[in-house]
Image 1 (cartoon, rainbow, N blue to C red):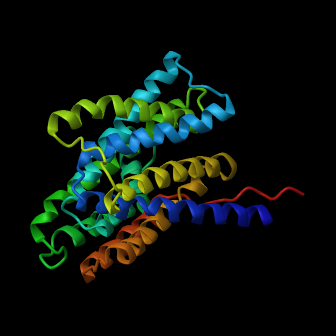
Image 2: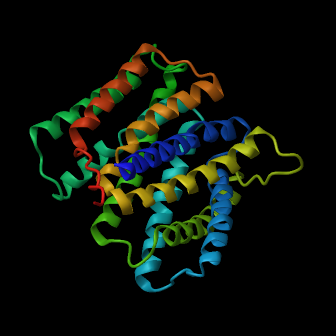
Length: 299
């Protein structure tokens, strides 16, 4: 029983930390940083942190074929596309709205798995998908939902980031980790992300390096990189001990904590339509996610 509470506490901690990345992203954007410039800086910090950890463990970074294609795939889908679309959406949408859009991850993952015939359609799961769509429409359509109604056209961009993340998870779920541990995969993906985003950020004029005294935006980028790396590591720790189904329940809490962090750190205020959309999306998630089952405590 004590182990069960340990897993629950770890799940709450991961969600609490992961949710910080959304308001941090908004703070960085408000400070003048943009899309691939943020991705480059954040991924560079991730490389430094993980290189130190992996160096201390003396586990190295595998460079065999199975590892390299996973680095490239995760770097593109899980970092470049995911972060690029998220940061672009953050230029126009409140942090809390992006957090709510991220709550559609289990719904999008199920939809992709259904299209690939990796999952079976049931009445409950189809109802969950329908609820998720209704929830997104409640946020996007009413003119009184967003502070700037014209920003609703950027909601599909936030959903696209979720789609890229979902596809990455499905590929890893189908083909496995290729003998990599989670930190090695994260490090390899971060290296790919830096190599890809450096020329893009330079070419688009968004490669702004911090100069002089760090302000809120610079510390937000640092905080986002630390929070994202720590949350990923914690998430994979939970997956390895309590299973992926239990770990997936973090989606619920990330949404709630993300909205709370956005209110506390950014002073965001949401219309009743956004609150209603969040409730409906979370209701849809309950129909798509399997019931969590903790491992039995050792006797």
